[in-house]
Amino acid sequence: MEMKSRTLLHLLVKRLQWPYGRFRRAYEAAAVELADAEGDPHIARATLSEQTYRRWTGGKVRSLPRSPASMILEHMFNRPVAELFAPPSDELPEPTVRRLRTPPIDERELQMTAREAAGHASEAAAKALPDLTLDQAEDDARALARDYPRTPPGESYRRGLDLLRLAQAMLEQTQRTRQRDRLYLQAGSTAAIMASAAFDLGSLSSAVSLARTAALYGEVIDHHPLRAYAHGALAYLAYWDGRPADAVRLAQTAGTFTDVGDTGRIRLATITARAHAHLGDRSGTRAAMSQVEQYTTDRRDELHDDVGGEFGMAPARVAMSDATTCLLIQDVSQAESAAEKALELVHEHPAEERMSWGSKAAVDLARARLLRRELDGASEAVSPVFDIPSEWRTLGLRERMAGLRRDLTAMDVREATVALDLGGQIEAFTITGAGARSHHALDV
Image 1 (spheres, rainbow, N blue to C red):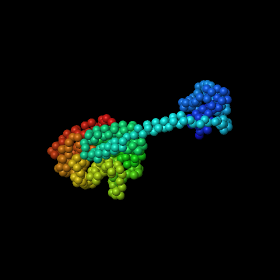
Image 2 (tube, helix red, strand yellow):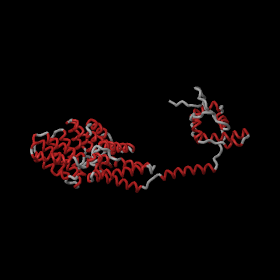
Image 3 (cartoon, helix red, strand yellow):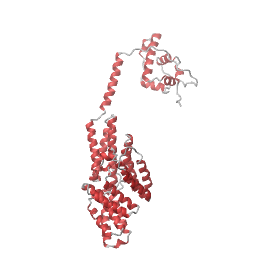
Image 4 (tube, rainbow, N blue to C red):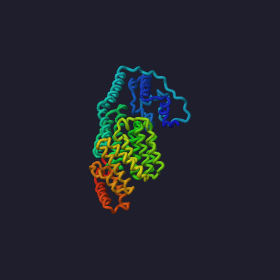
C-alpha cells in the first residue's frame, strides 16, 4: 500500500519521481523564466539546498516559503503555494508541471561535479588495506588454530584476543568488500578458537559468548563451515552446561549448513552422539556414532581441513570422544576399546597433543577398568595423567578426573589402600590447573 503523502508537493514529487538533483534543476529553470517575466534579475540567481528540498517534500514546513521561493514553486507547478503545502485531496489529476527551459550545464558545474566524484572515489580508495597486511593476519589466525592442540589454552586465549582485536580494528580501515570478507572470516575463526580456550579454562559463559560471536561473523559473510563449527561448539557447551536437549537441537542446526567437508561432518556426528548420550538416548547415540563411518568421500572445506588444528578431527580425537560417549551410556566394553584405540593412535601425534588428547583417553580407560572392578588396572591407566603440567589441566580433563573420583567412592573398593591413595591424588589434581579461573568470565 502506498504511504499517504503529507502534502500535495510531496505527492507530486513522488509521482514525478524527482530526486533532489532533478528538482533543483527544475527549480533553477523556473527561477530564470520567472525573472524574465517579472523583470527581476535577482530571482534568476535563486537555487535550492538539499536540506530545504528534504524539508519541503517531507512535510516538515511550519510556515509557507517566502518570496521568491513561493513564486518559483507556483510557477513550476501552476498551483498556489498554499495548496502545494496542504494535504492532498482524495481526487487528484495527474501532476502537471510547467514546461521549463532547462538552462545548459556550464563549465563551472561540470568541474564541481568532477571534483566531488573524484573526492568521493579518493576517500573510498583510502579506506583499504595492503593485501600483504591481511595475508599476515590470516597466517596468524591459521597458526592459532593449528597450534591449539600443542599450546596451553591460556596462551592460546591471549594470542586469540590480540588477533581478534586486530581484525576488528582493520575492519574499520577498509571498505573493500573482498577485504572485509577476509577479515570477518579471520575474526570468526579466531573467536571460535577463543571459545575453545575459554571452555578449557573453565569459563562456560565466555565460551558461549565467543562461539555465538563466531557464528554471527560467519552469518555476515554466509560462511557455512564456520557457522557449522560455531553451532557445534554451542552444542557441546550446552551439554556441558547440563542442557542436553538444547545440545541435540544445536547439533541438528549445525548439520543443516552446506559446503561442510567430511571432517566437519565427523566432528558434528561425535558432538551429536555425546548430546544423545547425555540425554540417555542409547539408540540416538549409536546412530550418531555410526555416521562417522559414512563420511569417506574425502570432501574438504577450507576451515576444518585446509586450516585444521583445533578445527580438525583426527581419528585419535574421534576415538577419545567415543570413549567418553560410551561411558555415558554405560557401554563399558566399547568405552575401554575406544580409549585404548585413542591411546594407540595418539602416539602418532606430537607430545603436546598426546598430553591433551591422550590424558583424557587415559582417564576414560581408567574409568572403564574401574567399572570392571579392575582397580589396579585403573590405577595403572591414570598414573601418567598426574604428571600433566598444571597449564594443561583443562576443564574437560579435570571433570573426567572428578568422574573417576565419584566412581571410586561409589564402589565397594573404596576402603582399599589403592583406592584411598588414588582418590587423594585425584582431589589434589582437580584443584589446580588451567581451570583455576573456572566459571569466571574472561576479558574479551
